[in-house]
Length: 260
Ligand SMILES: [Zn+2]
Image 1: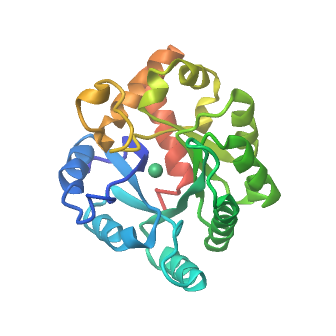
Image 2 (image 1 turned 90 degrees about the vertical axis):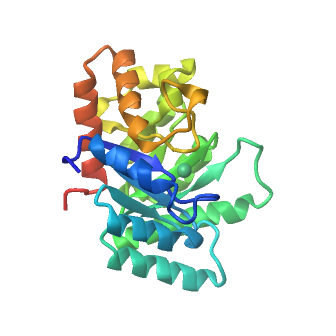
């Protein structure tokens, strides 16, 4: 690793069909060659062990830990979440957790809102930032963050797609907003990229989920492509890529305290 050049603030190195970590290894290495630090999401207990193992082996991998679908007893799972956060220095955030209304409001919405509140409490207890998933549910998420006074916790909303006004409210509450490949080519998202203060923006690939910024559908996404997200944001804002690289990296390092 050549020192932190970029931070991919949201990737899924371990997940369905990628549980062994084999998929991740060449991608972690390609990221390291470009100085890309990866925050990988382990949002369910099933993914914790393999994720922690990768972070032990590769110094450009850090973990966001969550329990959005607790196995067995909720109390036990949350106790284990708190314990793991305290014991493992590679855990730098809590999540991802949030609400997703892209297929309509889910039938278990009350339970999902409760899980978001529980994760806010865990983040407060272990003093780590939150990573929020917002699938067209920005209004309800902001309301819960307000009700729970989550401004003392802070964190980031990943793949932010709310309105500029909602972005302002999130920023006031101490949240950074993370942009991915589609923000560099989808018209309404580009407007957001143009207008928000550079000191609150982070960058992510959400790999392998989202289409990569330049090649879109032609190649599966991976963390090293965060370099192209930075280039795309710089183009939209009409500034040098180096300015966006330096700012977004500093924002992520500060928010997740990667230099401690
Ligand atoms: Zn995610």
